[in-house]
Picture 1 (cartoon, rainbow, N blue to C red):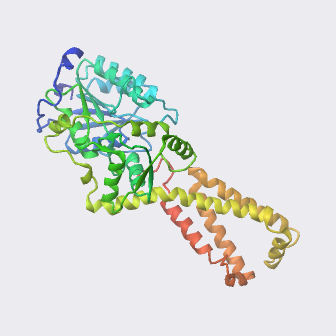
Picture 2: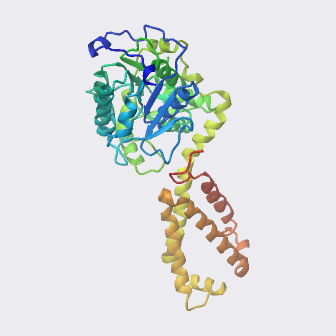
Picture 3: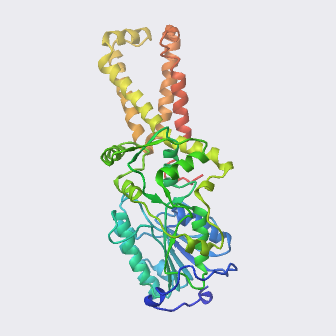
Length: 460
C-alpha cells in the first residue's frame, strides 16, 4: 500500500501557516493504510471500527492484544510506549499512509506514567515515523493542554503536542473537550452525578465546559485522514459552552430526572475528593476536580467546518431510545459499590459478633441443638466466625469476587438447611433472622451476575 501514499512535504513553519478548517475535505476517500496507537481506548476503538467499515486497512496497536480484540477485521499489534523500539513496528511504519496516536491516560497506574505515555513514548514514535517517511500524523491531545496548565495531565499533553508539531509531514494535533460517549468511563461518572438527588458543587460553579459527542469527534478525525490541507492544531468542541452544573442538569433532564445542586466552599470539596479515594467505584481525584473547576472552551466553527454539518448539542446527546438503558447503567454504576460494601460489612460484622459479642455459652447451646458434638463445637463456632470474616474481606479483591459470591450463597444455603431441620423455630422469630436470608441471597446473586468477568475474557 506504500504506493498509495500521498506525499505531503513541508516544514513545521509551513504547516503552522495553514488556516484551521478553511478547506472542506473531500468525502470520497480512497482506502488508506492506517495505524492507530491506543486502539483499545474509547476513541481509538470507535475510530478503528469506523475506518474498517469505510474500507481502510487498519492496524490496531495496544499493550495487550491477547486479552482484547476491538475489531475482528483489523490487524492487531502489540505495542507499549515503554518499549517503542519494535522491529515489526518499524517495518509497518514504512508502509503507512496515516499514523493516529489516540493513546492517553488520566491517572498514573499499572506502571504507566504521564511522561511515558504522553511525552517520551509519542516523541520517540513520531521521530521513528518521520524517518520511515509516514506522510500524515494525527495526534489526539486534550483541550486545556499547555506548559502552564494547573495539572500534570495537561502539562504532559502539551509536551507531546510540541513533539507532534515538529513532524515534517502533514500533522494535526486535535484537542478534544469533554467527550460524551455512552460507554465511556467519564460519561458514566457524569451520568451518575446527574442522577444524584442533590449534588454539592464548588461555589460559584461558573467554570464552563464545551462537551462534544463521541460521533462528532470520530467523524472529524476521519475527515482529517484525507483532508487536502489539514490544520496543524484544532479544538474538537461541541457547539454550546455550559457550566458543569448546567451540563449535568441537561443530562439529568434527558434521563427523566431533575438535578438539584447547591454551592459549597472549595475546602469542603477538597475534603470530599480526598475521601473518595477510599470509596470503590468513584472516579474523582484532585486533578479531575481541578480540571473541571478550571473549565475550558474554544471556538467550535473550525470543527463544524471539518464535519460539514451541525454539531450535536448536549440536549441531544441522549436519544430517547437510549435514555432508559443509560439511566439503568448509571444507577447500577452508582449503587453496585454500595451494595458490595453493604454485603461485605454484613459478613464482617456477623463474624465479629459471633466470635466476640454474642455469649459463647448461648452459641454452644445452639450448636448442640444442631447436633454438633461438644468436642468440636468451639472449633465450629470460631471457624465459622473466621470464615465469615474471610468472605467479607475477599470481596474487596476484584479477581476473587465471583468465587466469594458463590461461597457466600453456598454457606447461606447450608445454614438455612441446618436451621430448618434442627432449629425450625427461628422461621417464626419476630425479627425474621432466617427470612432475611432471602433478600440477602438475592442481593448476592445479583452481584454475582453483574460482576465483570476477570481480565482476559472477551468484552460483551
